[in-house]
Length: 531
Image 1 (tube, helix red, strand yellow):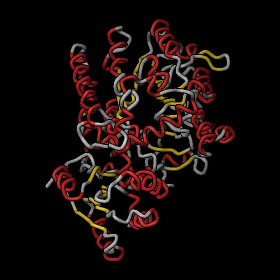
Image 2 (image 1 turned 60 degrees about the vertical axis):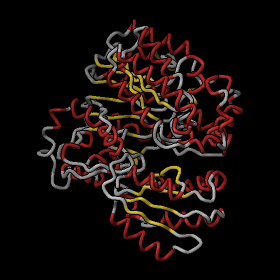
Image 3 (image 1 turned 30 degrees about the vertical axis):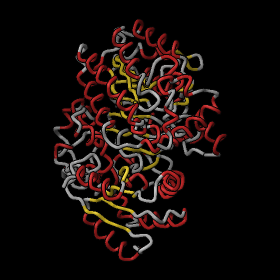
Image 4 (image 1 turned 90 degrees about the horizontal axis):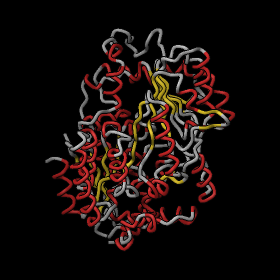
């Protein structure tokens, strides 16, 4: 019996609505997040016959640190919130988890709150990790480092954010480069072991889409062929040279995107503090000034610099790097920048003046809609200005390579296609330059929350859009839209629609905006709450 068959059986026997990956609660505040979900959602939205199902895979490395804690914690939450009619079904393909849960069931399971365990092995499903062989080897741990706004350092931007290598506030870059954590990753890769932090790339490749791993291996093919010989038995590398670096040390941003958080936007951080009293853990200006020289010291030999954010074009660190690279005339370095393209000026400096001096510049534009939809989804957007800046760069900086990164969610599900068709037909972009990611978190703004009526209409429009893309040979983009179709045809999460509107209405009131006025396609969506 495969995973799909097991789910069908659970739907019939226990009125299961969806499966939850419990691994996301293995974070610093995971237990509290779990409590909040149970309290705000399940206590009021689920019926007495409903059951909660968690997937617990062998890739959940933190499990070994505190075995069974979340299960027992969850039982306590159930009791506290008084929804004792629930029991928990845990699906796992890890025998260690199986053994621990058997022990937990014997210790904690009662007639009032039974804990049930169902073992499923070799689950051919997105919830189950894929066995990894030597072809999963990635060059990034041998040449690259990525930094987060709170100072966390990771092997790359797609690595699991909950498992950083270290933090620059307590560990130097030189120590991280050959530290125990990254050495272990290198060793595991060379052994062909599964690495939990690399799930994003594994999943992309399982869906036959290009991952950061495959892109990186192509870019540094000469290094890839030599990884084994240059690596010591403990995973360390002698004479390590940092070849590529991703600098994202700040959350400074002028936008308040609906799918973002204060962690990546200073504007949202201010808003969240005023609305909810929430404090965001990011590096302050003093800390950035203290630790930033570590990155500057690596620029002499660097081959690639990637700026992320926040909004990099509003960060002083971005211009310090560009000015230093200009000073040492390192013009052949690859410059990549992820930007909302709202402005090309910063304190009297025109970023175009810098880009013109470098031969290899790539701009990744965060664009998720067009016109009023773009302005609603990414609050702070002036769409006319975005198009003006873009067309200016196309004319004045012909050497720049452009990409568009879009994030599909409830807000833009019906109008993202309009943006793509507009720019493609006007020859502002090609399908090959567009990359589209499916929003998973926060889950209440995922397209899975749409009721079935809206899903059917969206499926129809996507199929029409795929037909359009065939005329422009947009094979990769077509594949990404087909992934969207697969998601729409999977789990029904429309019971989260109430949470979506609660979140949306709170922001609308605070920002003086209107969801229904902007999104006329959703004029009847609210009536489906509770169905």
